[in-house]
Image (cartoon, rainbow, N blue to C red):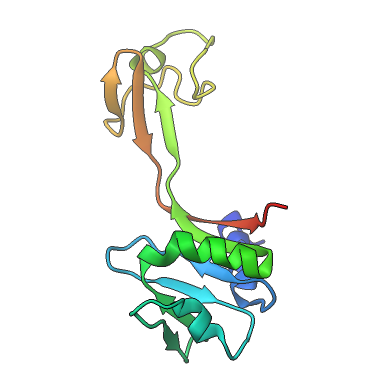
Length: 152
């Protein structure tokens, strides 16, 4: 049986490989450019460049465009205007919030935002303690996808 991670990866590949809705892939590494798939049009290069001095790069063996990260916001707005919808695939990390008072608690009542997940478990040193009433930590990087729609 496929795990949730496998199912998520398959869904992301399906979205990346469909050809009707543009897809922007934002990668998390320093210096990594945006990757972009658009429905075919002979004017895609000019439309992407949009009068800028930099040219988009066509990556033929992957069938996608690469453009600077700095183009992201403008590209989202123009894609929504032109196509009406757009997928954005990007890395994210969940932030967990808890508190030493919760980790050190005894009994079963928990009123913390962790909903009892860390209640009475102690601190495994993965938390950044801000105060006696607040601590935070970031989960592992994951990939998320959202479908953005043009506002009518």
